[in-house]
Image: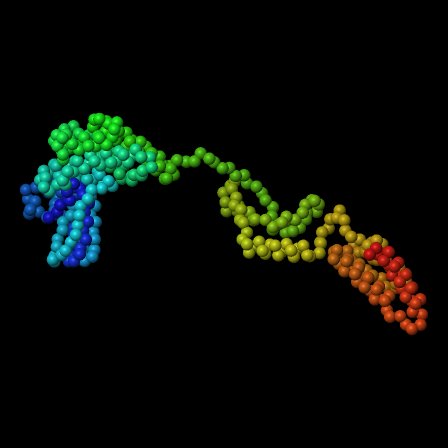
Length: 389
């Protein structure tokens, strides 16, 4: 037998042992319309609901679910379903109302009222529970720290309309416990500033409007509908890196110095007026440091004439950009120094000093040693003065 659980309650089933077979249909407008027509049909007992038609309309999407031992099934609000038990089974289940589908629960309650479902097959005290739910949500919305789901806010609008309709002619007397009028009186006593049901419903609708406005702003900010007013403008700058100059100095710009290694600029694949700076990794920085150290240790290869370089005291320029040092006439050897690099000059000067020292510090012979030693010492002193060591 197809049915919808009373009051639009959700239901859960847990099979302890045995088997349960379910046929489920979603609560679409077409299915609910056909279900209401099927309930009011005189041939209900002879018509299988899934074969029900209304002109060209037919039932949508019938789902079959087989539930075995130690399995649980949750059926949401308003789902039309039929249950079959093929074998002896032990099953636990229960029904409950909740705030995530208030509109669906009110829709099923109205459907039961139109189809005149007997009271014993309907949810007991449904209208009273809705008034208690309205008072609960009014307190919750007044708390600035409380949170509500979007489905709860959407359902509160339908709930406020239903409560206003039920408050026109509440059933029972105010002093009779269990009546709708007594329930309304209890809800008003929980708010000191309210004396009538209209004040209660007006306060509920006012808080609902405030919550919906806040929800719209939150959704716009979260979905990106509100565009930020802050705009950043970046100016494209032409940078010159050491890789572009290759460590050379232009002859036209004598004061220009080689740039140190810097992050590379990549703008070939980017749109206009934009650029991207690529920061080198730690490994690349290590290689750059080693390369810079090696460049610092290599001889100077510049051609700038304004640089002040170390030169010997007595020099004779050569046509091949070389200098020839002429020592004292007592030294028969001529030592030629090149100024290709500073290190080369110093090494040549050192070689000259060692050569002179080795020639003048020879072990004296047995005869005339004192005269030779004084002569060599005087020659060495004259050479030092000339070379300015």
